[in-house]
Image: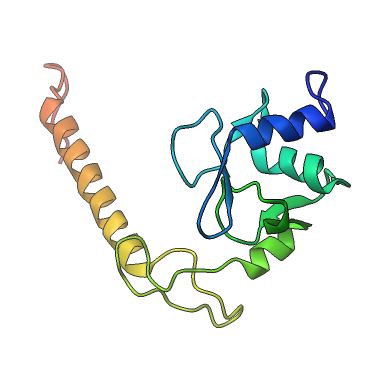
Length: 153
């Protein structure tokens, strides 16, 4: 615990700042205003980690606190578990489309979706090459040779 909170006062603090949702999640209102992101409470502590330590107990700093409900601002003790980072990565659900709506390809070696969408990567590389071409053209247009230099051909 911190020097400002005991286990009981931290439990009360978290419950005062939380709202029960219809799906059973206990959503905490921390310092952030956005819904669905990790929240900080009680100074610098992440709300879900503080809730695990206060409500469940036995917090191990070597492990990560995972949400079974996938709501990052949920502090419901039954929705929290401590697992390794590798376990979180294995069980994480991946969307079948990228953020731009392209279908994602599966990697043959792992069976999981590729990290980068090929279509988005191709478009990003094309935009980068266009920006580079504009910069080169502007640099060439701005170049003024010295009067004493001879033109090399």
